[in-house]
Length: 483
Length: 95
Picture 1 (tube, rainbow over the protein chains, first blue to last red):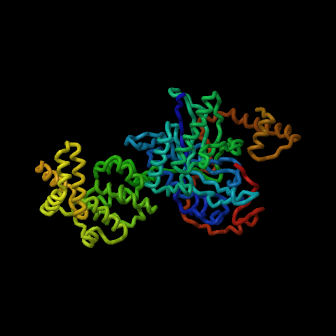
Picture 2 (cartoon, helix red, strand yellow):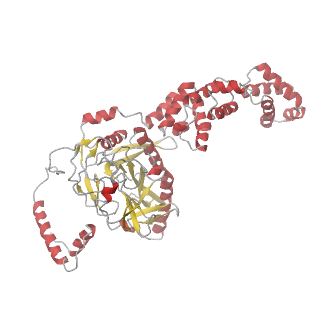
Picture 3 (tube, each protein chain N blue to C red):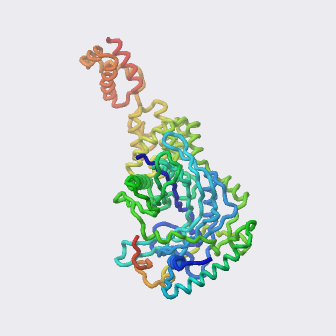
């Protein structure tokens, strides 16, 4: 049977703040257990939360980034449940009146089109602590350093119909929030965690099936795999005439399956009520305008601009834009060289390959944008062939100076002097009479192939410095005149 | 509004309270009495009234995003029944 998959996503985004949402404890990752948890985070009696202004600003920034309505008066609520890493017995969240209301997020798909996803809401809340199960034989260890870290939970409508769309959304969201500077987007450290609500229905049906919720998936790849695996599981149950149980499941990456989290089932009744320890957050138009003024250029706009201003391909734009450091680097190289397409090719080719090989990010590149720009200029003006450019790039990477210094030191100038090239061509033709005879006897298609032999010989004779375009032209002329 | 013993058991479970079998009838009765009072309040027309989220007619003050707390783990963990390697220890939790 043909099943349609229907999904909505909830993303927990860790906001980039120095201190926690309701206390002055540090949010820095990786500290020893419980050294960044104060009396407020521990839920000691009599402690009162005080809201962090930066968390509010980040939430409003996000809302404006997706063109959502901002809640002028938003309220915190208590979400009640018992778990050892939640010391107060409730999580402070926003249920009835979130800070960010409905909006539309346009997700660029691989084919270049935009796929609109309806954002239901985004609300501020505090993170819980961390339970450590493996460290101790008979107990569970609790680390409350993460308790009280500010989160923005971003909830979508059930608008996803494929795993590819879900992953495209998460990537675009990751790109947006790092552009906005509201999160470091470090998925390995849990800065972006995703819950997937997923159900199946017969193709063509309008009704929603019973859904399950897969909790806390923290990489793009796992999101894709978790969706496939849960799809298979639900389809199998439905096809054998069974019914889906509404429940929370956990994705187990080692086994590539989802499994039921039975322990959390009982408490699926959170009894939200307004948090009496906090007053409503009131946000006026002046504040919203000020935040709007401070918004940077966003990925969608940058993509459009790169296409129009630099003439790069859709494909190149889709690789250059998502990471704003990469986009900035590209712009610097393009400006330094005045050859934007070549710049894009070199960045996405040799530079990206070298960065990947050394596991470096673009900001850690040993080749500065200015130096790469210098190399691009020498390719653009014909000094270097693409083959020589590769050599110069490797030397740039090794820190041997700028492109011009390397060209001079290694004598790498491309030979574009036509009389010198002509002599080389003549010599190679004279030295290889058999191949020339073969060429003359061959048809059009075969000739193309055979001419590669001569080009190779000439490049060898010139130590790779002959201008390949000129060689091709001269060679053709000479060979044609022989036949 | 009448409350069943099952309702009480569910609420007790959610609140992590133990209510003995023998106390259940009396607790159910008292629950019902409280909810009857709420029923009475529910007869008032509140259609035009904005729900009150806080009795104080004020707005939230915000604090600057500055780290003000030093590591105070030793003192804060002093009253914990069990701890090891800087962790609070609780009975084994299995997911």
